[in-house]
Length: 185
Image (cartoon, rainbow, N blue to C red):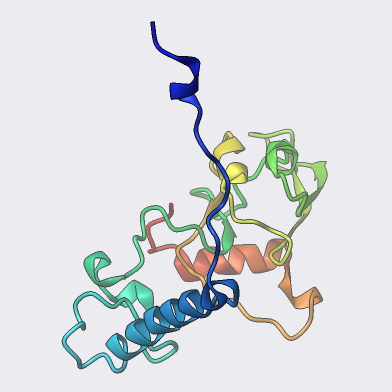
């Protein structure tokens, strides 16, 4: 049988030196790491060109580079929304409100109206998405039963006011016309 005193461990902290109390060694170690990384990354023509994923935006865009060199993987990228059209060039949305219900940011606003077409009961009279409020999670796209809303690989959207960043139905259909050839998420 062992003595109980053999299991007792002394947990008193060691006495710090003056330099350790001022954290000088840690400050210099962190500064050294920062400077080492900074000088390794100076210029893309250096020896680390293959390992540094720096994009000189806007002259160089991520979607123009291969994925291995830090480019954008387009199959999973979620950018600006678009409303799809059907074969008859009508908006595909049936105003079921499933996208607005699934949206965790509550950035989708739909006003439904009775449809003039025989193949559906209603369609969106008004369809707005606040692109500044959106978190680009893709839940609206997953919830849509008719694949009316999609997230495109397009990421360059600008606006001078908040109102310009609220995309209405016309602007969402315009995005469709611009990105109809792009592969969606």
